Image (cartoon, rainbow, N blue to C red; front, side):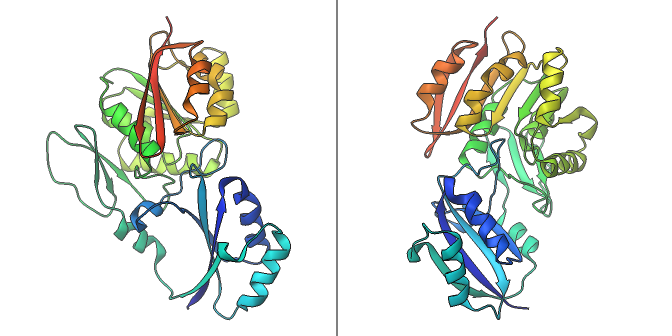
Length: 305
């Protein structure tokens, strides 16, 4: 059946209230997109981090309602729930019924990262190329496919490391893309951490699809902290793709979870937020460097010995 789509563009801090309001008004489904992305392919990704907010500064929420829903009444009700809402933030469109996962997969194309690494959707068969390291993802479960600049920065960093025989921790694992990529690139074992149980399900599912489930251990943050405090979660390589706020707060936890000399990388950082994090992480890490992709930053270095 056809639907009425309500599109609401908000700042990142307004997203939780906007999503709750749409849910209260009976939205059948709500998806989040990067409002600043230029193409539909870029917009198709939602990568929540440990802070439970998307990585984008401006977000478009697309909510589906029954096609017979009164637009004027819906807009008025939304305005009562969100007093700060301006008319230009809101738009409506009629949409036909579709197989939404099929559309998503049709938009998701294979992507290279670094020298060897490729990310492929599950519905596309990769060529038999000996030099390629291929990670297969199911977009129906994944929270991240690599198209967001922060994920791309981390994938390229992993591709540039010698991971043979190493254990890698991926904090804020989402779809498991970084942990799985590390395993496919030669890591012996990986740890994935996320505060969303659905993310851990997605990570486990994608690990199984890539034949590495037996080498991936998954934790909720509180369980990971206990393991790290007990000395049972120290990694040879540490990567976290979340948000600048949690990255600052969790620096001591990350330091405890990385072996002396371990390479580390953190991302989910908007350009301009790096100076405070460089000062914060300098207490435990050295050889710090900053790399940029679009408006986003990756900080990398090594755990002090």
